[in-house]
Structures are given as structure tokens and as C-alpha cells.
Length: 343
Image (cartoon, rainbow, N blue to C red; front, side, top):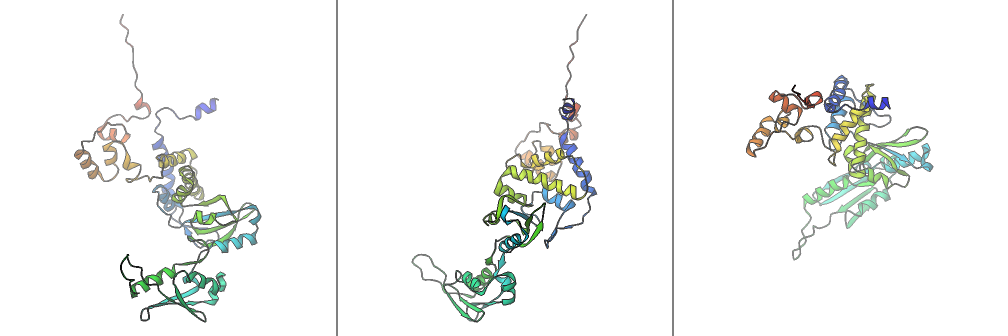
């Protein structure tokens, strides 16, 4: 019981300042090097670049990675290899040369047999995908010629003729077409974990990966915190922020008490969505005008406050330092009252 009481935070303790110092100091010691994930041909940012990505709540990491764990019957190396091949996205441009013929207003797709066999995509599979792109196609050996559809017009108007522009747009759309696998997941490899094999890939399409029957939906993880928020909700995103910051620290052999990191993750997610720690996030939403102005965009905040007659109630630390008052944290928050007895 005594140990529990000693571990409790004292009233009015400046926990935010302590957490910022505890993470910021080792953060400045971090090397700017990058770390190579085992087996994945992606240089994933770690150290300070990754820490900045997390606290800035980037929409997408520079190098997103997804770990896909498998159901019990698929955890052997051979089965995992098969799943990795099935999940890796293969585009039309990976197995064929796609060229537009603007003179004849057609698109020529030449199947590359060597690349197709290496990626497990047959000529028949390629043709099946292309049939959805055009109402008319011509096959000659390994070449498929597409004749673009006429552009549909509004009611009462004639169909518009095929133009060079529409052919070029069709060509780009065909190159980006998926022949096999899940869009957003590429370069999947098999990694040996704790007594099992799992798939690690570049990308972050969680919902797409979940649709595969071999994937265990309860054990799928990506370093894209926004994707976790979108698919699993804000509580899962909060845990992801905690895990990602902890992993960054551990990888650099730096120890930070987990309660400091928990405070950061709570502050970033307590509004119901992941917010950054910056002028567009937590710092930009401070109650006090002077508190917002002291961080960044000073003139903008002061002009807005003057224009809309905002009040400064001096509730934060920064505001009180600016005006030269005692800060309302720690002993500065305590008020003592004395009863004066007269004889």
C-alpha cells in the first residue's frame, strides 16, 4: 500500500512538462540512421524521423509496413509463402508492355511471358482482367489490342467519339490495373516469428488483407496509425501510438518510462481522433490566446484575438510566464489560508 501511494502523482504536478522533457531529451540523442526491416525491400525510417512522423500524426508513413499473421493451419513456411504470393499485388504493367496507338486509337498490351511466369500470372488471367476495360479486343499471339468504348453522353445527346485523350487515359488506367493480389500490399515476404511464420509486406491495406481466408484478422498490424484508427477505432489507434513510440525508443536502446509515453498517446487521441502535437493540433487548440501565440504564428493569433475580443484567463503555464505571474502548477497552485486569532 505504501509503495502504491508513493507511485501516485502529486497533486498539480506538471506531468506534461516532465513527459516532454523525458521524451525530448533522449529524442535529441537519437541517431538519424535508418533501419532495414528483415526481408522487406523498404528502408523504414526509425529514430528521430519516425518519432516526428508519429507525433505529427502524418496521414501516411513514409514507408508503411504491414504484418499479417496467419491462422493456425497456415503457419508453416510453405503455406506462408503461398499466402505471401497471393497477397502481393501484381499490376498489368508488371507483366506486360502497355502502349497506346494514337493513330489508330487503340491500346496494345504485349504479355511478357518470363515476367508473367515469375509472378504467377498467365496470359488467360491477363486477358480476363482486360475484358472489363473494353467491349472489343483482338488477340494475336501474346498481344492484346483494345478498342476503347465510346464515351457515354447525357440523355438526348449522341455518344461522343473516341479521342486521343480518352485513349491515353485508358492506357494509364490499364497500367494501374490489378491482375492478382491485394491493392496496397506489395513486396510481401515470409518472416519467422516466435514459433511461427508470418507475412510482412510494404503497404497498409488492412481490410483487403483480412479478406484472405488464411489471414487471422485479430492479429494484423500496420505502422500506419491513421489506418488503424480508420479500421479499428480510436482505442486501437491510442495503443498503436504507444507501441510505435516505445518501439522507436527501444530500437535506439533508450529507456523512457511508459507512463510518459501513455500521456502523449492519451493527449493525441482524447478528442476521438488522432491529432498532431503542433500548431494544427494540440498546441494550436490551447485555451489561452497568449499560449497559442507563444508557440507559432504569433501575429495571426493576436490579430484574431483582437478582432473577436477573445479573453485571456491566464489558465496555462505559458501565459503566466509571459505576464510574470506564478505558474499554476505544483506549489504555485496551492493557496494557504490562516485564521488570525486576536487576544
